[in-house]
Image 1: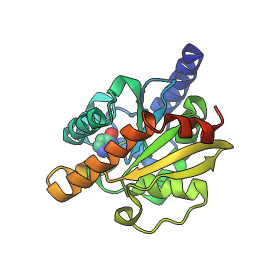
Image 2 (image 1 turned 90 degrees about the horizontal axis):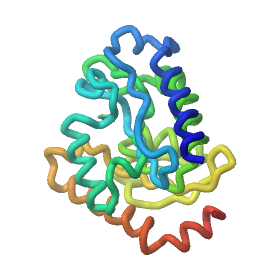
Image 3 (image 1 turned 120 degrees about the horizontal axis):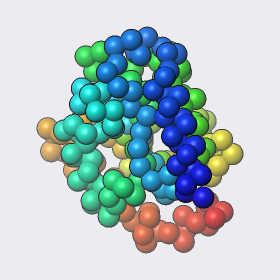
Length: 206
Ligand code: URA
């Protein structure tokens, strides 16, 4: 089953690498489709590739990625066990926020990845990812600081899953208070996938 999923994810990745649906393709070095376990329970969705990601074609390999790896450790997870991707797969110039039309153009890739992986939990890293998943779930988004750390049971694409919105690791890099909040959200993630497993499976109908 996982090999079949891996092949499907590779097809999606190839489409991303060839994509010209929005102007971000013009300045990219490499597109960043995402990577990880095709059968992951946890999918993490960031905002968009930065400088290092654009050079390497891999998500979260810069300073924010280093912090993300530490956070995964707090949840008892390694990078190989999760799937990591972004709302937008090509780097916006100067790391500006992705534009609405770029998010819209890239959305089918994220939805296709979600349908293949069928994760139990989606961790939304930052406000762009959270806003998009709240919209998909029909939830009202206010601000990331207000909604972070609260688990929401939702249905997206006919799938039961849990959303865990949290801060973007880049926002927490140089701010100890925000780092503390990020840590507490990843501790919660750890408890969801270990202690909370039976409740999780009941909700997911698995
Ligand atoms: N920030 C993101 O949102 N995604 C990455 O892949 C790297 C930094």
